[in-house]
Amino acid sequence: MPNVLMVFPRFNQNSFWNMQSLCDAFGARTSSPPLGLMTLAALLPPDWDVRLVDRNADDLEISDLDWADMVMTGGMLPQRGDTLAVIALAQTRGKPVVVGGPDSMSSPEVYAAAEFLVLGEAEGLIEEFIAAWDAGARRGRFEAERFTADVTQSPLPRFDLIDFRHYTYMGVQFSRGCPFNCEFCDIIELYGRVPRSKTNEQMLAELQALYDAGYRGHINFVDDNLIGNKKALKHLLPALADWQRRRGYPFEFSTEASMNLADDVQLLKMLREANFFGVFIGIESPDTKTLIAMQKKQNTRRDLVEGVHKLYAAGIVVIAGFIVGFDTEERSIADAMVDSIEQTSIPIAMVGLLTALPGTQLTRRLEREQRLLPLVVEHGDQCTEGLNFVTARPRRDILEDYKHVLAALYTPEAFFGRLQTVCRALRPPRHKAKFEPRQFWHNLVFFWRVTWRLTTAGPSLAARYWHTFIATACHNPATLKYFVYHAAAYPHLGPFSRYVIGELDRQIAEIDAEPRGREAALTAAPAA
Image (cartoon, rainbow, N blue to C red):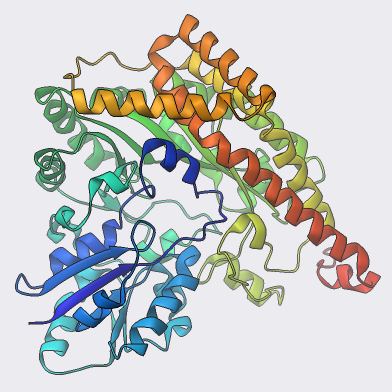
């Protein structure tokens, strides 16, 4: 039976999401484990020997490659460079490479050098691949019918393949797909608009496996929209809350959801009962015209500030995504975006440049309009590599607007000001959690590391940290742990925002130095 080496490629280290400072303070090597490969490993025959190397947490040794009969790898767009490097390295040792994952689904031509391409959700085609390998095939392409994989048949991930100590949190998945139709989004192209959900029994079994293995703490539901199927979620949450209660609330959960979560009071209460504390929401833009144009009308049906504060009142911290570069934007977008983020007091706002991702409606439209430019993937980060199309307004203006937003958001005063407001507004649940000595001491060390680093980072940052800490301790001490967790991210967010501003200055200087016709060529003519 074959020895299977699974390799999870490195993410770009110079990215908004590279919270290495937070990981260091936490005592971890990276953020989260490769749930997709762990699930794939569980789908393989039990007599296939599997070894997993996460390049974000471990080194890939030549001895690992020499042990393997095949190498399985693949990931997302920001991992493309390292995925290609893994393929090349494996092939120098004479090992056939199997590539899957979302980036290969969107851009299979990029991975043509691999011996095997496995395109689609693993549950829908793994048996075909296994049969081909057992029959002697050492090259091939396998493609699943889209949106048909039965996630109720998805197995318990192989948590035994990872070291929990290497990660700041664990991941589980309840559903795939999203019911909305955002033009720029590739999730609906990869997983469809009809969310498919696991059973309650599956989810509780996954949590029990983590619990039995000794894990405690933060678990992220990696769903692209947890509330895509509210009926299924509302069936799960009471069982999840009961499971938590009977074990003394060993876990606290975060996830990703759409803004209409704020409309459902019952659902917010159920999430609170189950101990959800955080959510990522794609807000994208404060401009109604732009939201309609991007087909994100669900964000126009409510007051954004009121909605976010409803989430705070339910004890749920909001991290949000914003995008600059849509055709319908005007020069006022920068001030409007900054005002929106300040009014909602969202501490961590991921602001990036619009990117036409492979396979999306946006890319197809830009191709029809002959405005699409090559997607340069050096880092795979939309903060520095977006706008891969001829823009509707001057590119220089867009870059200046983006620069203005970043400069306003990530000064110590602005960041800690928003964080202080959130910590005062949050109303976390008061569950009777079981005391876990190991978790307590780990959190205490985490607090000490964060405090030491921010106190010694300079008088301005130290003053903001201590002012916010004392204000939180006085007005809402139950939120101190959320304060420390967010504060731990600032040693990355502050320098990264300055790095991106430097890159924007460089791009603006290049535009200024080019012949006048070059900027015009990258700007679409106004419609008649």
